[in-house]
Length: 141
Image (tube, rainbow, N blue to C red):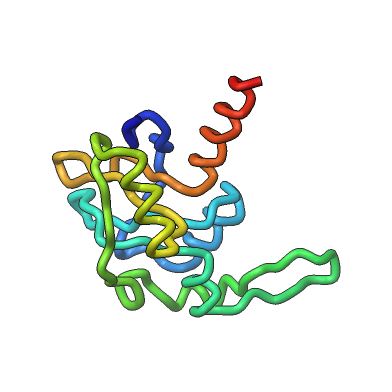
């Protein structure tokens, strides 16, 4: 099976010039934990994760039990100031086995999938793999 068969295709990306306010907003509204960061040409530069965000500004617990970030604090920081990291990517034509092996060995929360044009074509997460596993379990009944 190829990565393109299970990857999430409609990937939200951030620009290297975006502030951490936008990161927190997307994480909260879309209930996701990883976002690819791209340059103005759409080429991937890195990944920002929920744990990266927490290192920049810890969320505060509200009375209702929710955790919220201070927009004022987050808006002070831009992704380009804190992001640049070596990033592992795969192609849509790579095998799912390759993705699983890399994620397990390197303890990755996601792998961005990049097309031949160098732009983000998708993302693979453990949730994508669990959905496939569940589908296979149900099919084997």
